[in-house]
Image: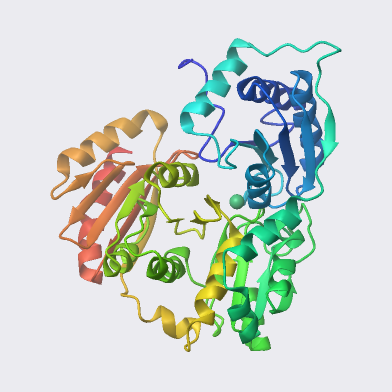
Amino acid sequence: MTDKPKLFGTNGIRGIPGKDYTLEFIIEISQAIGTFFKKGPILVGYDGRNSSPTLAKAVVSGLLSVGLDVYEAGLVPTPALQFAVRTLNYNGGVMVTASHNPPQYNGVKVMGADGVEVSRQQETQIENIYYTRRFKEADWKTVGEAYSETKAIQTYIQGISKQIDADAIKRRSFKIVVDTGNGAQGVAAPYLLEELGCKVISLNGQVDGDFPGRGAEPTPETLKDLGEAVKATGADLGVGYDGDGDRSVFCDEKGVVHWGDRTGALLTDHILSKNPGGKVVTTVSTSSVIDYVAEKHGSKVLRTKVGSVDVSRAMIEKKAVFGLEENGGCCYAPHISTRDGAMTTALMLSFLAKQRRPLSKLLTSLPSYYQRKEKVECPPDKVRTAMKTLESKATGRVERTDGLKIWSGKKSWILIRPSGTEPVIRVFGEAESKAELAKLFDKYLPVLKKVC
Ligand code: MG
């Protein structure tokens, strides 16, 4: 099937409905998904996007038409659907979502019986079924039946509560500002936090497919209001989620919003203190601060390609306890090896409950590295030459897990990686000193710009 375009991107099938794909396509890809699963029941859920209920109906139709029974969970965060698939014994799940993308986008994610996104190989199998139209056939007697699943959110909240010392958190009566960004965590996270005895102040709490508050992506730039609200209310912590609630970005008590590699390093420390020697999985682009923390506990950090599916699948294969990305996606294996914004928040509270110092102080205990991000526009036909040229100029250790990661000494590196979604090559570097970082960029960036 190499001549046919790939349908699955970094994280499921995505695009603008009505422009990039038709409703018919969603029905047919769902027939392919149903044929791949062979048997039901399958759990279907959706995020708060305007097109989600319509697309979910098409998914349900496609699955029923190939003879599988379907349960509809309605509006749920992606991690709630994933946890419910595994815990309530479904044979698979389909989530209608475009995660943090702008409001006009939507798509589907496919989960196996373990609740984790299907592997890259399984995505190709589904694509092959779709392109060869080898759909399982069901006649009027064998079409599936549709039911509703009303326990997904309750099951999810209870599952998270079981993983932490809820009493220790309750004793601290934390005040927390929660910015669900009009996204799907609005139906779960605030309720979990109230159960944990927190005083919850909600921002952009109403689920709204236009994401009018601050858009669907949580970053230090989009979470400025969260920082202000934390300062104004004297809260202990702030947290912002993405549109489907699997990523969480934290804000300290001073109103400063931090990227996920630094807060993730504190969580790594917390989790490894209870699981010494446990394995941690992250991507090639995450800061070396994770390695610094893991070394303290005699643990190994395994690195994958950029993409949460790669992190989750590597966690399962290597029996890792924790997985993380710098964008705020964290996976805690004792709960489920997929990204989960609410589980991560509960872990952060669990960590803070054991500390006497506030989050801003705890973050200063980590080593600081200088980082720089660039992107260079590069037409698809020049990408190969660009990467080959860079490789020929590379001095020092080179890793090829995803693009080229070129090391200079033990702690400085530059990662040059073609984007999976745009005609650009991403360049990301980290070093212990400003001068060392500049040296890396001065050496490789002009080479790249010249070829592209
Ligand atoms: Mg997401």
